[in-house]
Image (tube, rainbow, N blue to C red; front, top):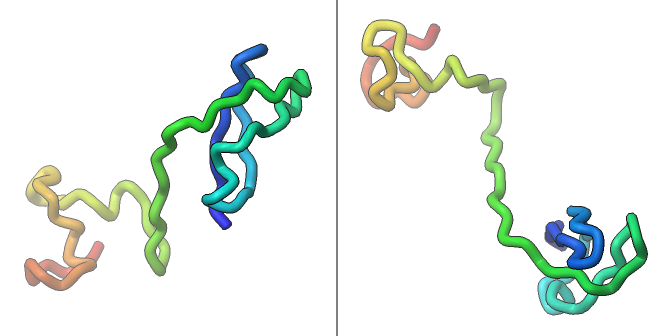
Length: 81
């Protein structure tokens, strides 16, 4: 089941609910004011791959970024940091 983010139209509180896709548009109860005037928000999602990553893994020491991940993918022939 996905987690959906909602915003209360009464108090502007944002909250998350774990619910089925078919039930995402039904009224949810705001945990702050208990109003049912809520709206589903469009949310982005995060993707985490296997292994330990950080923002420094996505830049090249020599090239100043440019999309190289420092050789972790093996496509450019560079050795990883």
